[in-house]
Image (cartoon, rainbow, N blue to C red):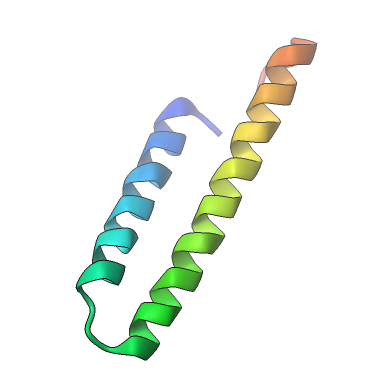
Length: 60
């Protein structure tokens, strides 16, 4: 994943977090919370892969 793609993912997460705060329907808030959690987990996984690739000198 490129640095640009990681930044786009961070922006997407920020938008969903904002929606989560603004929504008034508890069910919608719960769904948005789940989406944010999944996106954050995916982003962290990608960062971990990038970090391990940097340690062993493998290009991503």
